[in-house]
Amino acid sequence: MAASLDPHDRSSWYFGQMSRQDATDLLMSEREGGVFLVRDSTSIQGDYVLCVREDNKVSHYIINKIQRDGQTMFRIGDQQFPDLSSLLTFYKSHYLDTTPLVRPAPKRIEKVVAKYDFEGRDAEDLPFKKGEVLTVVTKDEEQWWTARNSLGQTGAIPVPYVQKYEESDSKPSMGVTSVGSVISKELTGKPKINLQRDLPAEARVNKARVPNAYDKTALKLEVGDIIKVTKMNINGQWEGELNGKHGHFPFTHVDFLQDLQDGDAR
Image 1 (cartoon, rainbow, N blue to C red):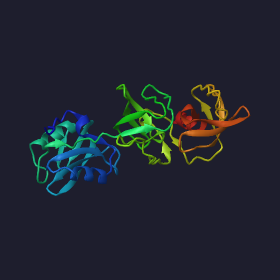
Image 2: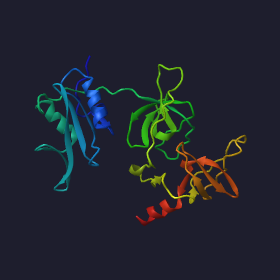
Image 3: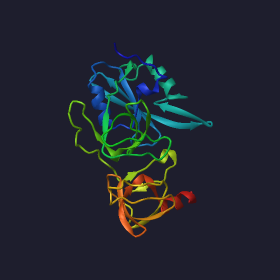
Image 4: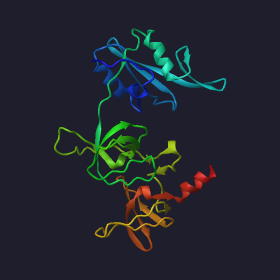
């Protein structure tokens, strides 16, 4: 039975960060007009886009998030609404171009497999072990997604630590997820980590780590230690010098001194 439209069920129709082409491809795979989704605007931060299958095309309607008399409003065309749910309720019974909204597009289940251990650093992080399979819930940012493990626990995961997983394969796909130049959690106030930074650069250890006794190249970290970062590998295992020893360590265990100072300045 086809899903119906519940404007208040945000998880059913909000797809987060999604390209125009991906939205078009997904909606064109549906035969029924009025199938839709809401995604983040890729051109204006904070705005949204209502993507709808209409006849033999997909229409993309910009939703502007505006401030009016001290209140946040959402504008689409010449209509304004207090929230996205009200907007969808209106177009459930009013035509956009050739159709009203009928139902949200089905969300494809996407799974990833861990390439490395991730211990987590904050309460909102989801720790996992190498080889663990996770279900992607939302792609909140380019480098940090929300995922769910087999126990039903959800949290933030660093994208460079995982890769696409195909259940039909006996082994996980070796197609490595693309990684941009910045790993950040700006939405939670984290310092931005720029992978194009000039090195070497000093960083402060924020979490203690005792490496495996058999791993002779891993550095032992104590909170407050100052480490000289000499190389930032895209897999999240960075290299540096500490107490006269050169070795590797997880990027999640350090904060660059310059970033901490910039954060204090703000």
